Amino acid sequence: MERVTESEVVRGLTEKANRVLPGGTFGNFPSDVVIREGRGGRVWDESGREYVDFLLGSGPMLVGHAHPEVTAAVQERIARGTTFFANNRWGIELAEAIVEAVPCAEQVRFVSTGSEADLYAMRAARAFRKRDKILKFEGGYHGMSDYSLMSLAPKRPGNFPQPVPDSAGIPRSIREEILVAPFNDLAAAAAMVREHREELAGVIIEPFQRIIPPMPGFLEGLRKIATEHGIPLIFDEVVTGFRLAYGGAQEYYGVVPDLCTLGKVIGGGFPLAAIAGRADIMAHFDRNKVGDGEFLMQVGTLSGNPVAAAAGLATLEILRRPGAYERIFATGRELMGALGALLERRGLTARVTGEPPLFDVVFTAEPVRDYRATLRGDSDLMRRFNALLRERGVLKGESKYYVSLAHTPEDIRHTCDAWASAVEVLATG
Ligand SMILES: Cc1ncc(COP(=O)(O)O)c(C=O)c1O
Image 1 (tube, helix red, strand yellow):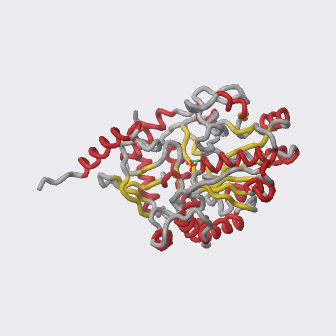
Image 2 (image 1 turned 45 degrees about the vertical axis):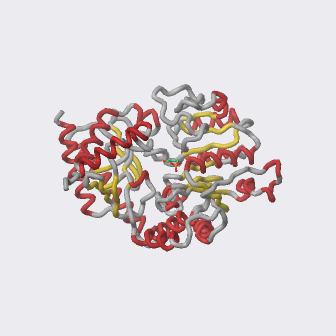
Image 3 (image 1 turned 90 degrees about the horizontal axis):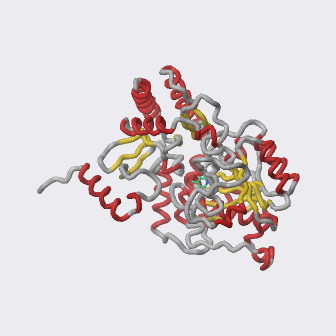
């Protein structure tokens, strides 16, 4: 019998993907990588190539792929039914774990994706404030809703506070409902809040925007101005929740919002996300509390799914153990330091930016404090660097390294070798 080689398998799958999927992908990642499996901090593609994985499924796999405890929890759950559309012990216990961990979280509503969580958080702010407009920050990612896809990644930035839609198919009228401010510019954001205070329902922000940390005083100042005007402050913690600290960015930076959204880590690799926050705002999800007129309609087939919740609970249990965050931060710090040193040694103009659990390089000489600074980075060089790393067995997203608890000293060594070799190629032409 003729043997089908692994590269033929990949070719076959890619051809099929190109036929049945628009762009040949699920919309997430280039079609030339087809992942077969993951374990710990590594993944393998269908051709058998092994990678140190900094994509981490775009972040959920903080404790590593196929962690034995998460797998066991999920297997036990799956054998007893996978979804009920009703309260279940695992979802209730996960909500309790979130309330115990996250400073702003008095109550929790589950949904299936971060996009939904952000959409409903904004809706909750509107229901509470009885106003329509939302202030967001340029370059801030809040999922894929019509409201969120404003000035996420404009090629040509607009004039603040006017938003630039990121997608076709968004009604023109939505533009009227979103104001855009520059990240890390407190004076500009505060002026916008003051000017539009009578129309503003809420302010939504990634407290750590993509890979850009907040400058000292920025989140504190935003908190103060939002409080002054009674405008709910929403932290999008879909990425940062349970990652920058067990209590998320609000614990890490010491600024507590009124509402937050969570996703990725809390689902342990399954579709689960949440809106959490002040009980008086969350009350809008409860018809009995607020009455018909102020009730916020929200239903989802898989909300609080027991398998996802069991995976999330097992993940949080691992993260609660002494030393978990110390290890993630130590790995990240070592990686960030090594990357910065390598780039500097070879004379490449670059900034390594982020926090240890989540960082990347921007090929620019200027400090990276906002979206426009990332836009001025050399994106061709970035693309080449990422491609060279892929060839050298390091997988990452376009502009992010997600560090895992499962990354080992050997993974770090492999990554540093790949960086050294790729930087050499970039530096020599
Ligand atoms: C900060 C942030 N918010 C929201 C989302 C959307 O989450 P999801 O992809 O689960 O819809 C993402 C996704 O990466 C994100 O990074």
